[in-house]
Length: 77
Image (tube, rainbow, N blue to C red; front, top):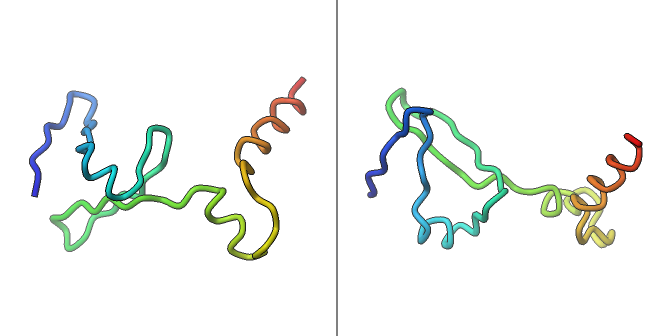
């Protein structure tokens, strides 16, 4: 168990070794929920590249999030 400080903006820093174990990198998302009224559970959220092939296995999805972002930016011009 670790103790981390909550900032004025109610932010916490996840310990590096824990992030390394879970594969959480800067820019990733995490899911946060309250359990049993007194516990905060933080879980790694799957990214779009990890979820995209779930329904269509074998479809080339490498860098899908980056390609979608590029397409969104092109369409805004």
